[in-house]
Length: 289
Image 1 (cartoon, rainbow, N blue to C red):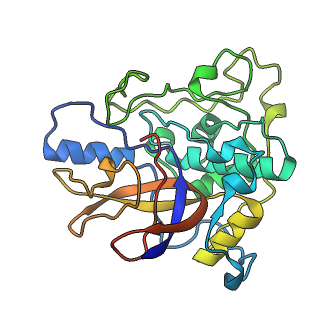
Image 2 (image 1 turned 180 degrees about the vertical axis):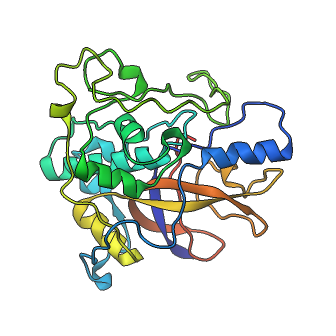
């Protein structure tokens, strides 16, 4: 039976323990530290009304095909050993929206600037709402991946290298297994070869706001571009196939005995029709986790 599901693109903070021998409590603490955001009972930003009637929302929508001139929509960032999901998902969604409104598909915004300077705990976690407020009040500079440092292409590239999460990889080294410290918020470009100064490189958002309800979120994505959300990360110990740290692709359905490990922030790019043995579920596109 076909069910409506939501496609999500995000870089997961749930990096593996890389073979370390841990007690149950140590392993639980490890995964909880990798959950970089938290659901709140009330919105942290002013709520904006939906832009479309629920009856006008189509059964399927994919921002990647709607705006093919914006490669950032389908881009997946790697958080490395850092709980920066809140900063990466928000920066990427803002990047998408800037491309949609300006037509500039070459611009890459800095998740590092958001992680370091927006209100939050950096690699220790934070709220997407604070990131969006930062875009509106301070703006965010350009910044590519760790590998672009020294190329002079952007102001503040991501400070941590990509690494292999959960699996052995011939392409990427194993994640270090311990948290990276959050870099200090600097008002200068970390790539010294970049020709612009920090202040003049800022890109600002007009206003930050929250959305309530599925149709409001869908209408927003259709008219303005991707947005961010937080979901509860569930798991049990020992880990089994229903624990989110073991998730790789497809429709995620957690087990009935799972406990809440924390929250994970993601970027939503659309929705569509899929199949599941259970009732209507959300789906996460496979990400670098």
